[in-house]
Amino acid sequence: MKKRLVLIDGHAIIHRAYHALPPLTTPYGAPAQAAYGFVSILLRVIDELKPTHLAVCFDLPEATFRHTAYIAYQAQRPSADEDLVSQIVLVHEVVGVSGIPVYTASGFEADDVIGTLAQQAVQSKRIKEYDVVIVTGDKDIMQLVDDKKGIKVFAPIKGIANARLLEEKDVLEYVGISPAKIVDYKALIGDSSDNYPGVSGIGPKTAQSLLEKFGTLEEVYRNVKGKTEKVKSLPAGVVKKLEEGEESAKMSKYLATIVTDAPVTLNLERCELGRLREDKDFVDKLKELGFKSLLVRIGAVGRKTANAKRQTNKKNKDQMELI
Image 1 (cartoon, helix red, strand yellow):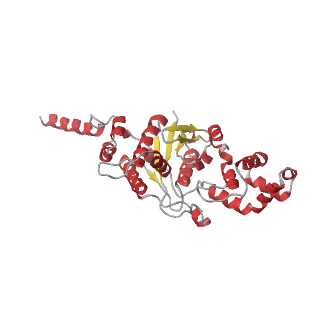
Image 2: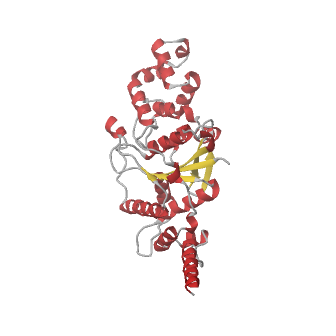
Image 3: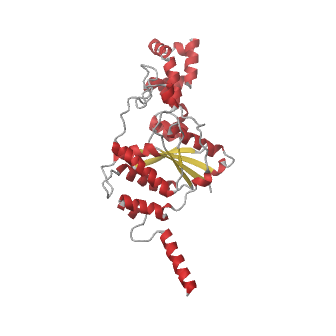
């Protein structure tokens, strides 16, 4: 039976939960809706995707190579709310007690870490044994979807409750562009959320048309520079915009491309998923946070955890041996 590695984009899920759910606090008054949403999605992922292996990837609070290359990268984003920052800490605590491994890389985003781990999984000697599912709300990462390699994305489509498992055809339907062309597409139209411009004046429809006609950004510019017959069929205004925006397009493609050689190494043995619902430390953490509905969901209310049962059974056995 094929094994499945699930890679969770920690920050993407936390942010989506924070903005999608109403305010929630722990018994000690700390904000907790993002942490609650993260755990809820974690449990759903385990139920629906049935991973044999699982890991969580996080951004680090420091500049990445993209900020170094382009000073305006994400510069327009406001500082994170204190409530959100404190919940990121909570999620780290939950993941820590669960035993699920966390991967980060200095100078790289979580997307790059995920891209690297996914490629390592499918390029290993055990490629035929594994498929990879990335859990995220970030459309950028859909460039990694590859049917041949067995890389899919599990994405919340609306809020955090409705999620879909996306293959290449689904990405085309959802985003409007195939995974292989997402980077070139963003190089042309830019990305307001990450604050890079693309080619000024080139919108989604024109970008799609250009990629249908030429295939890649490089082919677009090869034809523009060569003034080929294909280019002569384009409106003069579009050609002028492309000529003027070449350097911006190249930089935008560099910023949009998820790298797959970040300094992380996948340890599949460490990622092997245990029986999380029966893990005493995990259950105790949910109790501490006051996540009662999640405790009901995993059947941890009104029963001892498996660990506690084993301890009781061992104690009884020891007592019997003494008698």
